[in-house]
Length: 281
Ligand code: HEC
Ligand code: HEC
Image (cartoon, rainbow, N blue to C red):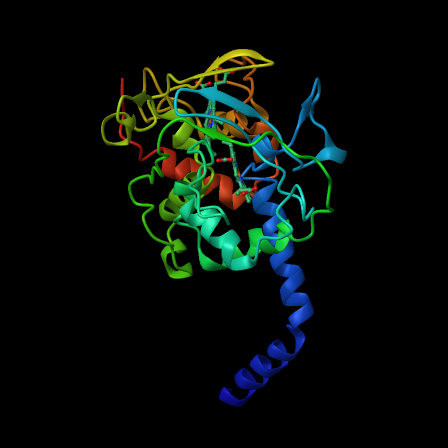
C-alpha cells in the first residue's frame, strides 16, 4: 500500500511540470482579478454598456476628493504608461503595502490594505495574470496628493493568510470578502476613516457616477435593516446578478458583473461569512 501511494506521488510530481504550474497560476489570477477582486471596476475605462473590453486595464475611474485627485492608472504591461517596468517584488509591495516603485504611497482609494491578507499563492497568481495583459499605451494624469495617504487595513486582515487558515467555510468567506474589499464600500466613513470597529457593514456611503447616485446598503445580519432575513439564494442573487431582495435592480459600483463568475463554493463561503457579521441597525 505504502509503495503504491508513493508511486502515485512520483507520477503526480512528473505531471505537474513548471509550465503547467505557471498556467495554473495564471488561471487562478484570471479568476481572481476578473472576479472577486474586480480590479477592472476601477482600472478599466467604462462606456455606456460598462467595461470597454479592448481597453481593459488601461486606466479608468477618477476621484477628486479632499485627500487626493487621482485616476486609477494603466496596469497593462506597457513599459512607458503601464506597469511593464515593475518587478514582481515591486508589484507585491504595491499590492500588499500600497507603496509605488518610486517610494510614494498610493492614494488610499487603491484598496491595498485589503490585500495584506492575500495568501502568497494568490498574490503570485495576480501578478502572473497581470504579466499576460497586452501592453496598451495610455497615460493617465499624474496623481495629486493633498495630504499623507493612509493605508486602512480591515480588522483580521493584518497579515497574509496561509492555506491552512482557509480550511473553514466562514474563514474562507471572510478571506474572500476581505480581498473583495466589500466592507470598504459597505462601511460608513467617519472623520477618522472607515468605521470598522463600530459600523462594519452598515452601509450608507455615497457613490456618484454615470449611473446617478448609488448608496451602499446595510449587509450586516440585521433582520430589519440588513440581509439577516434574506434566504441564501436571495443574497447570492444580489451579489452575482445585482437584484435586491425586493426584485429591485442594483447599480454600480456594486461589482455583480465581476462576481457573476464566482465558483459555487466561494459564493457559499461568502454567504456563510456575511451571516456572522454582527447586526447594525
Ligand atoms: C477602488 C478602486 C481600485 C481598485 C478596486 C483597484 N485599484 Fe489599483 N489603483 C487605484 C488607484 C486610484 C490607483 C492610483 C493611486 C495613485 O496614483 O496614487 C491605483 C494604483 C495601482 C497600481 C500602481 C500603478 C502605478 O502606476 O504605480 C497598480 C499596479 C494597481 N493599482 C493594481 C491593481 C490591481 C491588480 C487591483 C486588483 C487586485 C487593483 N489595483 C484594484 C484604484 C483601484
Ligand atoms: C465599489 C463598492 C462596492 C463593493 C466593492 C461591493 N459593494 Fe455591495 N453594494 C455597493 C453599492 C453602492 C450597493 C447599492 C447599489 C444600489 O443601490 O443600486 C451595493 C449593494 C449590495 C447588496 C444588496 C443589498 C440590498 O439591500 O439590496 C449586497 C448583498 C452587497 N452589495 C454585497 C456585497 C458583497 C458581499 C461584496 C463583496 C463581495 C460587495 N457588496 C462589494 C457597493 C459595493
